Image (cartoon, rainbow, N blue to C red):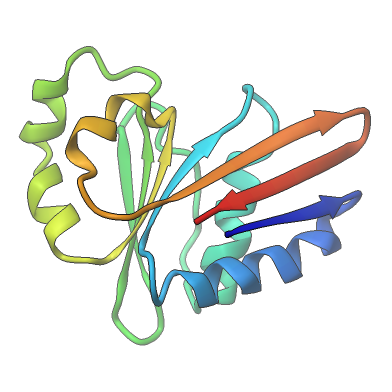
Amino acid sequence: MKKTFEVNNLKDLKPVAKFISELSKEIPHFCLEAEMGAGKTTLINEVCTQMGVSEHTSSPTYSIVNEYKTDSGKSIFHFDLYRLKNKGELLDIGILEILDSQEICFFEWPEKILPYLDEKFVNLSIEVKGPTRFITLNY
């Protein structure tokens, strides 16, 4: 299936985040494809807010992964794989255990995680056209 949202301002992210939150109950892994500065982290922050994360969320640019807890105790993992040097680093941070947990995972720069995703995942792309973002989910 495929769904596209047109986002012209930050309040337009709320229905996108709500949709992702609902979809994550069926498919917990999301691969985000977009150019730098397109709004990947901003979208993930809104999803975290919708799912009851009260702590500060930010891009894991240097740490590779951030884990957030929802108010119900579930984990959300946010990966930024841009600086990943090799696949061994993923194994070092416990990627296999994280994937097996079926907790929600967002992967920025997902081409590095694809060999480990043998189950169904959501391909989420953000296309920038002027001030408008087109967020498309293929699932």
